[in-house]
Image (tube, rainbow, N blue to C red; front, top):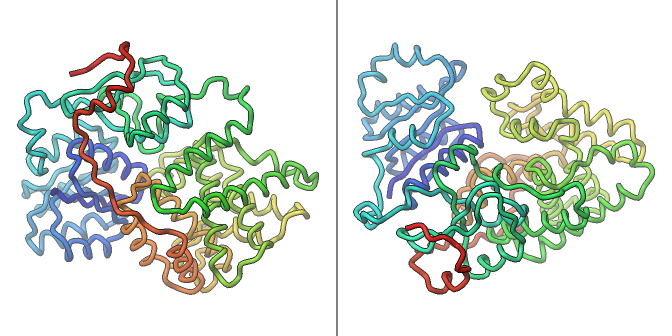
Length: 475
């Protein structure tokens, strides 16, 4: 099995690299790290075959990791991904005289990464030597994402075997959730699109621009909420959250949404609660779910504190445009530098802007404003706006920050059950002081990771029985 370590602070980039590599080789093991210390620890404890590291002129992490690899004389392909001037690397003979060192300029595409790792990845023998294998022509998309939508702009395929794919939906096709449930009931986890369409639509995890919702403005709000619950429930249940815990989480959200809708005192902020269709909105809802579930396990649990956390979850990014919030969730400085000056200012001021809005509303407890103001602080003092450390961050803010990062990690790992232990270890290393430690301990009680299910898809008459004669076979 090929092991690839990705050192990249931007979770969207990590999504893309992981998806490309997993589509090139289903057996590849992806290890995500964000710091030099974590990277070196991984290099010490396991044999890594490929390292993909971001490079920034203002950050020496890339060089430090490479220096360690070079010092230890580890046989590793080292790939630098950057959109900065690479002259600093080119001046370093230890880099440029090494045949196992490559520089890729962002944005990185599937062909670029494929060519870079060619010869370094362990390909499955069955697919590598099968002249009729056509898996390289397709990319997989989690089937759960299709539950949110009812129209595809491009053809979507079902995989029956490495040799056989059938066109499930034609382009410009309207489908219903019942069609998706037919395949979910048969254990189908992924649907597929062609590599060409994958590149054209710049597909990443959780971002499927080829799927849309028809007449979304005319759709009943309750129907949209049902769609949201269905998708999020499917993802979280697969990761080990119990159905009881999920139902309680959704009930908590419905209660606070009802109060906001029916209480005149909330009129001044109710317009900031966005629809449930975007990643931004999903992120808020998931943060609300986990904040409530984790709070239930700590000593300062109360109905009043639950309301504070739920309100903070729904409001914490309320002043940001959803697209800006989506991009900025990773807090990646390279991405921030590419934004307009106005968007950068909005991003770094949004915590105070929403906190000030809350401060002006007598119906909302002032601690909600504190949580919102501090939700980008970090236990080691590297956050903003005040650079607080764990000892100075409010207990409820600590719990919220933990839940917020947990949701980020689930997205970064595509809600993959097999990555839950990795996520747990990451969070345990990062949040081990003061009230953060209590949040982590509570989290361990909420999650019961399920073992990764490895499913080999063979040619299946059972699935073929589901297909209409009009579907086109691709083989």
